[in-house]
Amino acid sequence: MSSTCEECERIRALIEQLEAIEREVACVDPGRRDKAVEQVASLKGQLLDVLSDVLASGDGAMRRAAAYGLSKLQDLHSVPLLVAALGDSDETVRGWVVEALAACSGSLVVGPLVRALADQSVYVYYSACNALKAIRADDVWPALEEHLQSPEATVRKRIAKLLGDMGEYKAVPRLVSLTRDSDPGVRYEAVEALRKIGDSRAVDALIGCLNDESHEVRCGAVQALRWAGDLRAVEPLVAVCVENEELRLLAIQALREIAGDEAISPVVHALRQSRELVRATATEILGTSQRSKRAGVS
Image (cartoon, rainbow, N blue to C red; front, side):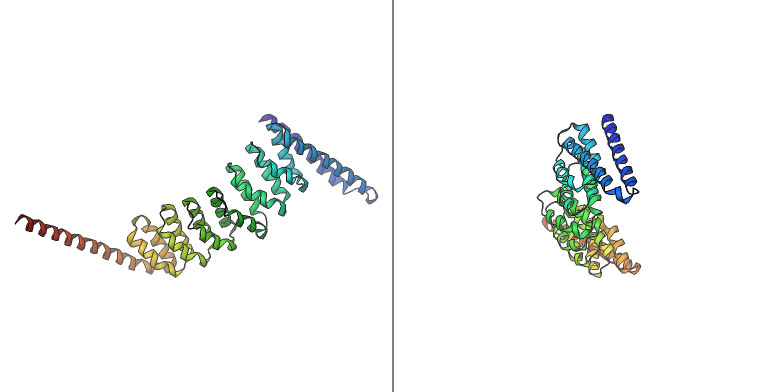
């Protein structure tokens, strides 16, 4: 690790020197500036070539340093090599590669960054997320939409979360579809994303999620409906209050947000009636049972 830090420090120093020269060149007499700019560009190109070669064939420490250097150079010419290095066995290399792609910006890096969302390393995944959030949403959405069809649940889950963080309204129909995904983690992230986006088109799907087999999805649906504030959710939430003790408090809070404090009294009344009905039904069953036993004895 120390050798990696030393190499990164050397590369950082070289890049800083190049940047300092570029600033000085800007102050050079216009008659001599073109030649100076050409020489600086040549030096930068040579450094890019060296870093590219090291990234492709160096040992672990050198590949990390090279990826770090490329992240500072911000050169679109390095994009193809960086894309190939997303498959590097070293997590730190992949992390710096994502940083380098993010620094290059432009439409060329969107696809590779979206693919990096599937990385096994959480560090690489988060770096890719942050990079994609910094790019114009209209440029990112087509690639994200395509990968929502990934056979990997982890990819679908991570993209759903990212779309929620981005507040991407275009994604609402696709996220609604994901609330019926076979994977509970994907369904939960879809519900959470819909909560963050807050689009009324999702209300019916969220109501359907109140009966999901996953406790986390059901809780998420209640919270999403709470934030949505749509009156269509009142009746389903009342049913949750009466029928589902574990979600009752969340559902009452949601009803208060949607319909105001005055919504609580009818819910409390309904719960009392429900308990009375349970008690009366149990009493009737016990009475019937006892009569049957006496009739059997006689």
